[in-house]
Image (cartoon, rainbow, N blue to C red; front, side, top):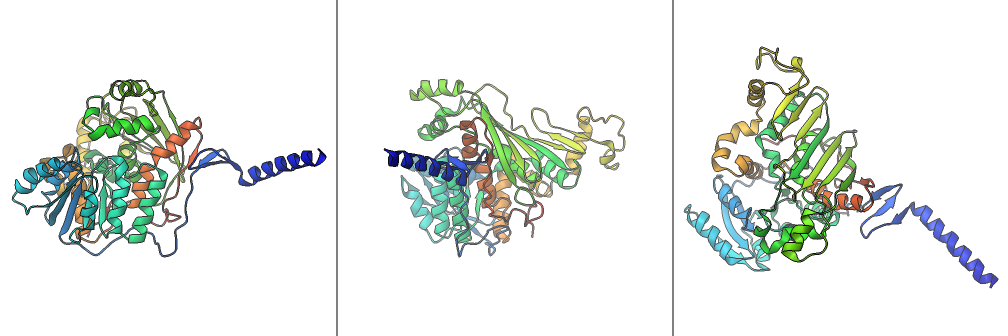
Length: 470
């Protein structure tokens, strides 16, 4: 009996010792809690694998393309890119052969272009990736297929452009990073909101110091999807939201403000806290359409991020309640303020507005937006050089007012000229990982979550965000 008691005491002591040494309890499959912070694994870079920060490959004067996914986004992408010189369409793929045929007839044959190879079914995308006459694979499928397709394409020597979010978990984000580093291939997430005219102008203004030091930024995806749920093939999007909590669609709001804040180009996101409301409207929709009795994704999710330099970012997600569309784009600086929704405007100190733009400052004050004529003058004076180059054509071609076309144009331009892309695989990982990071915080009553450093220590090697030009 004495020996048994001694064994139990020793076992308890050993248990406490192990727990104190690890300084955390295993609280989930993919993370631990250490020092009251949720921490996800950060695998080391393996031998022979090297960073793709500022990756530039040999110029590709004519970019040969294959497209996977020809639904809501893919078909329009083929049509937009057909307006860019120096591109050849080689292959089209979709789960449904009728969609492939439709794009072939509408865009390819309709514009007198050489006919594309056609692929369909569950495995058709693999055949497309295996072709030896494709430089760039453009992926517009449901979210859960993004990483398998992007990884397979890179492993077969292709550069990749993939719709948002690029990945749905931290583990998938690491897969994209590792394969991009192993293959030295580009992997760009197609975050079109970085190319909206207002966001581009604000980026230019911020980089020229008009707002002083930007200390806080906000972004969101607030878009009632009730009229659109039925149009997602196989109900994939509502099904995903039914299964997963957190901000599962953060990149539209996060991407543009990360560029302003030089994320992994002098600063990095250190940790976040996230909270969500109960699911009321989401659950109701799922009950009616799926017969579901549960719904993981809260109707409203709010996330606060702290950067290494002490800046803060607020990100929101709501696709369930009646509200005007809102990406919440805001920049708060020591010398000024920019706001996009619901009203575009700037608040600036008088002395920071060049006199040759607006000679009369008497209407300015720091308690409201500058008058509309001054705002219009600023939008012209600080128009981003990229917008100046392509704005007229972008608005004519379209795609969310032209920003989709600018995104495609920049992707092709950088490949043709052997330049680093505007968004790299680390951006794709940093912006996409919010889904699982926020879910972990919510599950633990708003506990802070450490951001993985997908650059593996290289976040401060590039000094400031910029668009590459030849």
